Length: 166
Image 1 (cartoon, rainbow, N blue to C red):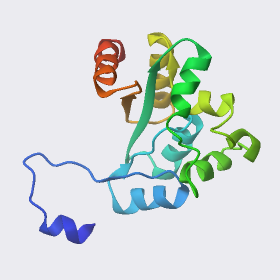
Image 2 (spheres, rainbow, N blue to C red; image 1 turned 135 degrees about the vertical axis):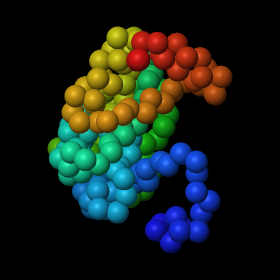
Image 3 (cartoon, rainbow, N blue to C red; image 1 turned 135 degrees about the horizontal axis):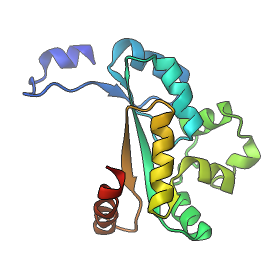
Image 4 (cartoon, rainbow, N blue to C red; image 1 turned 90 degrees about the vertical axis):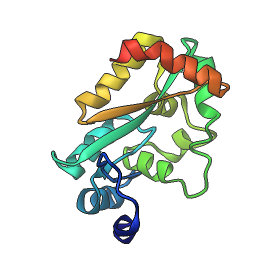
């Protein structure tokens, strides 16, 4: 990555290099060789631990969902469509195990407890509250990703949430 930076065009506005770092080794690399970490779709406790590993000076940007659905079955169904826990050798599975979730909780797309911990769903207040919990746990920024059936609906959802999240 360092060699690529030396040969890449220089942008007018500098930006930090972030690593998509879920586990302790990648977060150490993000701390030592990048400008910080960008973990996504993890519980608040993961954010707390990531901040401890990165220290106070490195950037921690946390990716989080926004599922505007108040019916638990509907919201969890949308979350399970990501197949986040279905990937063989998934770093998400390893990270969730390190947080204490067992194989039974991680099987078949994740238990309700796992889905509720990893995905922000509910009304606007519930989504905003969860995002604030990540900020309180040490995130510098939260990148909110709309979860909807299509791109236009996702954009509408984010447009609806924008004034609430400011």
